[in-house]
Each structure stands twice: as structure tokens, then as C-alpha cells.
Image 1 (tube, rainbow, N blue to C red):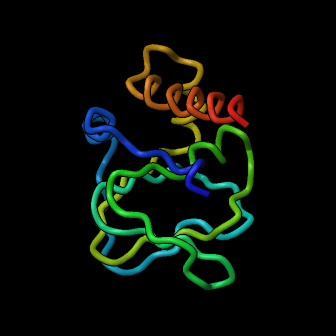
Image 2 (cartoon, rainbow, N blue to C red):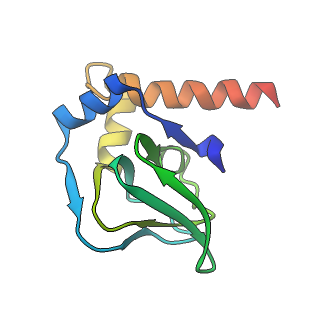
Image 3 (cartoon, one colour):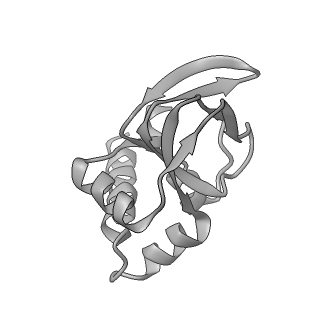
Length: 127
């Protein structure tokens, strides 16, 4: 599961903060449900996200991670639900932003998204 969750560098977090709004979550919030293709990537800036399957917690993700990009790029449903916990701060990267920055090398997010694609290719070749 961790292979599809990417750790963000400080530079990547700074870029996301410059290009996207930080959302404050005041109550626990389900953003992605099992077997759904996400509508947005989720960058966890501060707080916690619980990954769930059949309402059971599989894993807790802490600040500095990006989820959902792999699934958007590959049009692949997630195998787990994603609940953002109360008092967290997130940045949502829309599907259209993800797909646009893959095509546009001038996009500020191009480096971030292309690095995720390269990481996946490297992991696949090691199998």
C-alpha cells in the first residue's frame, strides 16, 4: 500500500502551498471511498489520515504525504477508504490539475507529478 503513497519533500510542499489553497478540516471527513477513483490528490500538510477497509483502520498516515495521484494517472480505483482526521490541514490537487501538469512541462507541479511517475516506473522495474 505504501508504494502508492508518496513522501513529499520540503520543496514539493512549498510548491503546493504556493499553487493551491490549504484547507483546514474541522471534523473527521471521508474524502475517498473504497473502490473509487479519486477526484483529487490529497497532500497532507498537517494532521492525520486513516486508511480504512470495511470500516477498519489499516494504517495511519501523518504529515508530509501525497495520496491518490497514482490512482488518478492510471484511472485505478483505490483499495481503501481515506478519512482525514479532525484538525488536519490538506491540499487537494484536482484530477484536471494532475492530468494537465503531466502534459505541460511549464507547470509548477510538473516536477512533482513526473517524479511520482518515475518512482513508480523504478519500483515496477525492480519487481
